[in-house]
Image 1 (cartoon, rainbow, N blue to C red):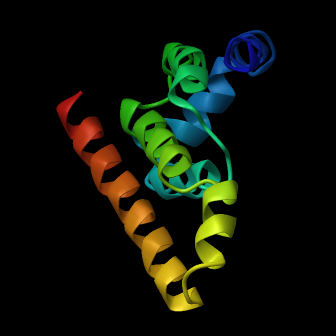
Image 2: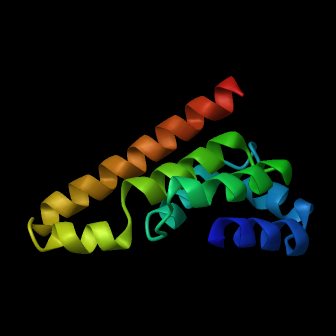
Length: 114
């Protein structure tokens, strides 16, 4: 329900031109921004499907959507808080850096292929 609601909100209230301007395939900073925004979000795959569908129909590059999904699924705030109780800050930073890197690299590959 949350994913469908968020997708409907984006579809109805966010202008296509705005999304294409900030998250189009030609925007170099769109991938890192999507990965950073995805990390604090708690994105379940089931929730992200309607959101990703709407984002792509509005002109957001496929790689940007993938970077958002990987960032959110790879490292959420609840997961980071749980890991921080078990590991040192260096390990948490390495984990976040790896999720961020994988999100950007995969997003670049998707943008090149699609």
